Image (cartoon, rainbow, N blue to C red; front, side, top):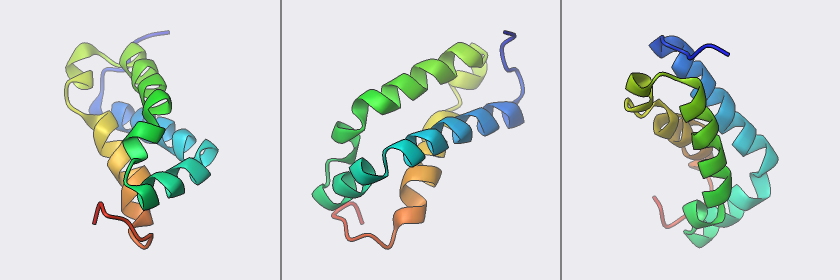
Length: 87
């Protein structure tokens, strides 16, 4: 499989991976937000997603933090209504 070399495609991949993490780990995400340990609880899932993302995009795009931005947008932004010490 060819490496992704455009920013738009890298962003789409990052959001798709973050969406999968969100869909398959909803209960963990809610528990992590409420207990202020989201990144500890989701550590393995996030690292698995990051590894997949890194394998699929060019090194230059990986360094641009699209994956981390997608995590914030998909896992955190939409859950601002949940009581959490994070906000």
